[in-house]
Length: 230
Ligand SMILES: C[S@@+](CC[C@H](N)C(=O)[O-])C[C@H]1O[C@@H](n2cnc3c(N)ncnc32)[C@H](O)[C@@H]1O
Image: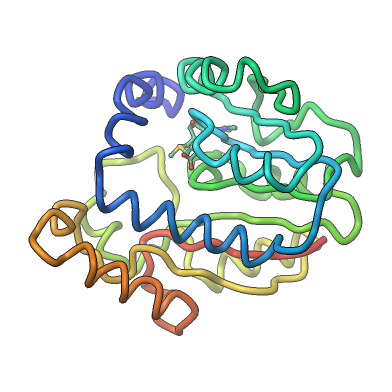
């Protein structure tokens, strides 16, 4: 199944599932923490969310950027975002491919791609595109999936997903010309989402994931976000 077909289907339950899942509350809160810790006190002219999907992270951009662009490859995912942000002039949404960004060189001071790059066939090309559209000094968030994780063990069937060790991902970013600053590990301890529904589990996992997000254990994280700078 191609990635677009997969997400056409996933779009039907993507938000509903995440809205009620304690597991995704932990993951999305950590994403928010990473974003806020690296944008605090700054304001940006233009921000870009690549693979924005249904737009779950767009409010983060809206609080820090004067203009926000959201782009995604799957029309059905983007339709949700279009409905949600129809009345926000600050936000413009478009269909596009991370491997050929429809923007001019040096357009953005903030570029992020959460949970999308592992689905892109040519990730080096996508990173070169991010580098091209980012201004000098831009803050960049990219998210990868570790092969040494519970998540990989349990996700063998997802052949549209690629897995990179932290070292490989850092190498890709540095190869594209970025300066790596910080790694945030997410889903290091949570073997499966369903564990988070057990009594007391949300609090325990929330504590552990936050406490160890910057530890060497992040090489075993199902997801990890690398903060870098152009
Ligand atoms: C797991 S969702 C993440 C959505 C959003 N970033 C979030 O965190 O909720 C992955 C998204 O990546 C998009 N995607 C996959 N390949 C892409 C590509 N080549 N260019 C842009 N977006 C892509 C999919 O359509 C999907 O909406």
